Image (tube, rainbow, N blue to C red):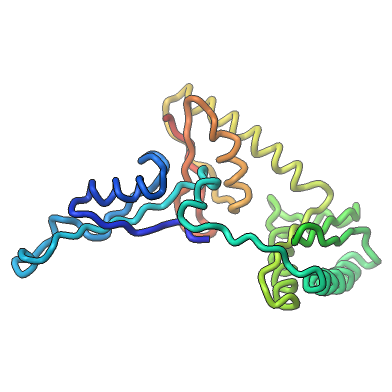
Amino acid sequence: MLDSKIFEGKTTNEAIENGLKELKVSKNDVEIKILENEEKRSFFDILAPRVVKVELTLKEKNEGKRNTLEKRKEYKIDENVLENAKNAVNDFLAKFLKEVIGKEANYTCIAEESIIKVDIKEENADFLIGYRGETLNSLQTLLTAIADKNAGEKVKVEVNALGYREKRKVALEELAEKLAKTVVRNRKSVTLEPMTPYERKIIHTKLQEHPKVKTISIGEGTHRKVVISLK
């Protein structure tokens, strides 16, 4: 999904205002990057129209507002296509779990509302979760690739094991509340360790209505992390 857009104006402020007006957000809702500054003009450009370009990127806590940048494509995957993808995921998973666990594992694999949901319930499969869900996330990535290949299009696959996702969500929400109190008390921002997009969204969502703190994400790729600071 597109999460940034370039805007133009005769001055930096005009370019930014044009962007804010089109996106229907405030300056606090975006990250601003100056691409072409009005000061960087050579003698030969003096007669050319002055154009300043800025890039505005919506902050992650405003996931719901990103539709102003690009309308999300909403479509339902054909039932037969989804079923084929689910069967492929199920076939692979059955063999994989039997290989790593040593027996047929207790799990479910269902197709629901264009999403393939896998829930591993085998008690001795806790090693599939890994440190803070890293192994589980890797398995989810693998199963998503299998689903995509068999469907011929993007298919969302969600993988859970022994209720880990629910427990992790509760733990992150409690952490967010605790760190918000720390930020307010010490009046200093706090930077969390790198997290997945799913986990960062939990933090942003939990604190988006907080009266005294705000959240943004910084960094790139797997090093992207949440910063909690005073408003």
